[in-house]
Image (cartoon, rainbow, N blue to C red; front, side, top):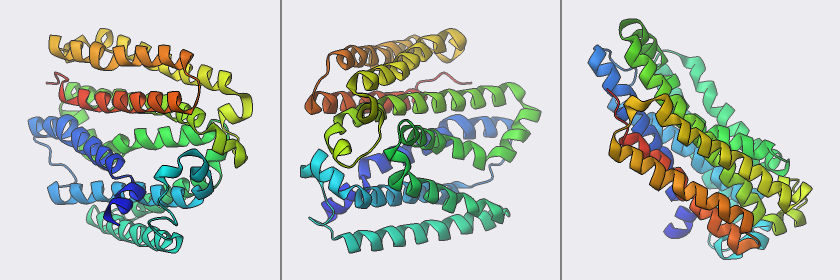
Length: 310
């Protein structure tokens, strides 16, 4: 039952969400704040609550997506289906409600803590967008992919937004540090967006059979595998160009080890993924390519630890 619950909420993905926010906060923002003598809006305890809120939003979205996609998942990945096999649909709905209730209460408390109650509206907005993604947007070409990519970029961006007042103060007292931190977060958000778009389109090609049966109008379902490959290649090549451009744009961020990491651990696997994309055919091949794309996304997150920020 516990393992089924972990699969339902996609525990590894939740760990990645939390890790992203901790790295952005403690690697990019807090060092700059401390050097400038600026107190963050959220102390350690309340920052942890913000991370928990984000994780709860994501977990709730994962549960609801599995409920809505039950029949599609039976066709695409029957061995991984949890709903009505390990966990009853009614139980999943109950978990979805409880997780969202807990998340909203936490978000409301944080909004009161920072004395900006209107910020609590961000929680139902995020939940509503994920609800619409599962029920409508993911069945439309490009729209569902774009929304998920935007959410992945927003996982990092919400930390910046939460500390925007401290960041504005930092911009006034130490503009160079503010520019460096802001640019680093922006670069990571671009990476998260582009790499997610690349993987999401590959996953659409992997799930083509079930999507066609459910009348989902994804890019490969609507226009074929060839257009799906071209769309994924567009974002993959854009990401590769971005990775090559980055050390030329910000050479001071990179030491020799971090350059090696960038090119051999991120850019080279991405290049291999693009070659495999051209050759891939069939569900198994696209599944393997999707897993490689996920590793590239994780490698990009780890890159934050290697940037030589001052």
